[in-house]
Image (tube, rainbow, N blue to C red):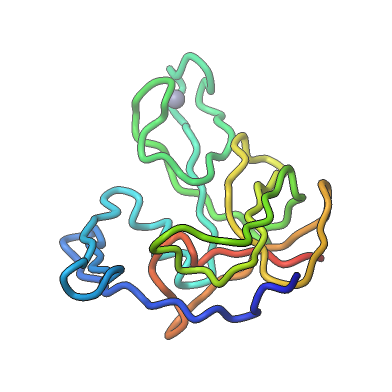
Length: 170
Ligand SMILES: [Zn+2]
């Protein structure tokens, strides 16, 4: 039960349109190229490719829930789900967490970029009000509560997708 340390993942091609990234991902060959934009969430994906984990939080003093002191959201939201105002970006320094839940994936679906088997994990992070889903690189077995720390695929290794964030056990 070992996930490869450095899975070979085809990187997406990034085009910048203003501040937003638009990706071209030949997931199923040239005829099956997938296009999409990260729009206002571009800083998150750009941050991953630079080795930084960026969350968002609401600082609107009129927000009915956060009252201007919102918790961190990860994956980030461009706008607060409670007051619908723009959130602000906040880096998480030395991101660490614990395994909240996991799934051992033996067979992935069509188009899955990760080599199987691997552990898909949900990570509880102090100060973050959401429990983001990601994946673990390294040997198993694992158990609920195991400590993990974030790692990133950066530079030439970056895929410019959510796969640029992964976790290893402490
Ligand atoms: Zn709000």
